Amino acid sequence: MESFTPMSSLAGGLLVGLAAALLLLFNGRIAGITGIVANLDDPRTRPWRAAFLGGLLVAGLGLFVVDPSLFAVEVERPAPLIAVAGLLVGFGTRIGNGCTSGHGICGVGRLSKRSLAATATFIVTGAVTVFFMRAVLGVAS
Image (cartoon, rainbow, N blue to C red):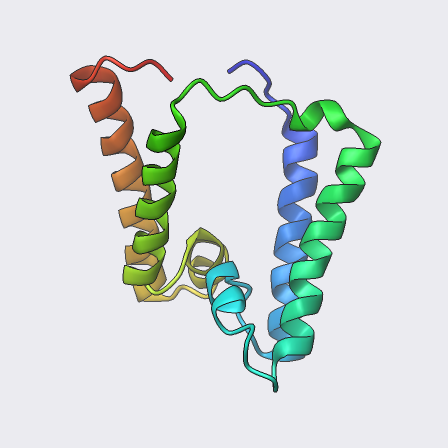
């Protein structure tokens, strides 16, 4: 590991968990980003959805202002490959009825069988993809 950051990772995890717990406690909703974005057009729930997404953007912008070096990322993959990967992730979240934030954070915390299965599928699929990219295609990460 090149940059193991246990304290900032712990703080981030606690904040994500707190936000998810507060949304469930006060709004009765799961903090799954896919579902929040997908239903942003519902006028009855638009205010809290927009506020939640706005909070994500403001927090990211605030972190960028504090330490822009955290956002310095070099992508060594061709843009078409990244686009295909993004589309596959998008299709996967649609097929799986949610993403890692909804299933992996909120669903697992509620011991949802469907979310446990979905999260296990995410992890296995990621491991198989890394194996295939490295061992079969010879692409280093």
